[in-house]
Length: 115
Image 1 (spheres, rainbow, N blue to C red):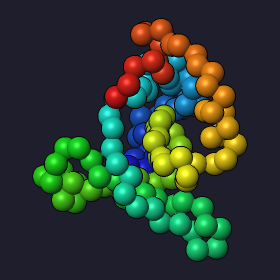
Image 2: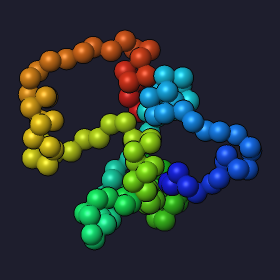
Image 3: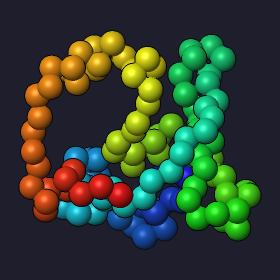
């Protein structure tokens, strides 16, 4: 999974300029699939993620024995929700969740439907 794997703009002479939010609002992108991120390759100089090892739910026959590689750019563009142990979550984010404030989304809201 890599946003630079194919050059759609050059191949089809089009401009793909929708933001992540615009793709969700228009239905071009949606939360439709869950996967387990089982590893990360960090940049040795910056410690920022470069790519992730992803265990897919399609079984061993897809990918490399059920695993795929996802670039950080793909993650930023197409991942909408993550679940992490509370101890590993940023402290400021944990404080937001501990406030116990909820926003109930309509069933037809793009973020209201889970994969």
